[in-house]
Image (cartoon, rainbow, N blue to C red):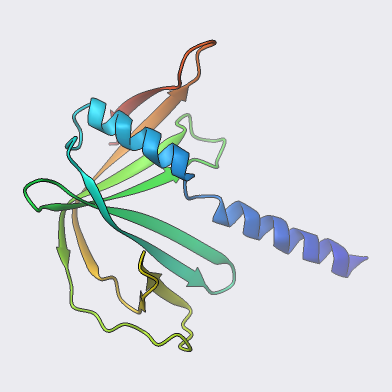
Length: 158
């Protein structure tokens, strides 16, 4: 009986820890809201998606969406859902306005590490291919009025 309870506790803990990344629909909606608020350019093109994977005691994943504007400048955005009921906001968004590309060695498919970076093209590396600088964080409050589309209120974090 104790083994079953312990197994269930591990499964629930893993689910809670991996629920931090936003769904693709939420990502699209949040990007649109950021563009409408003129926080990011409207001419962004998604060029890569990098996930930092941690496989130590519990599995964890943090995803950064890498966008390019018409001036060939890169920005990265991390969209996190708030899974803690202690906070009043629904999402936190970290935007990195000064992104550059690092030279990294890609890992072989049979290489296993406790933490690594995974890219949209399926490649993996020990270190992040992107240098993320000049971070600004925002808190996003979501409201769903009756018979209306979801609305977002965005506030710069302290």
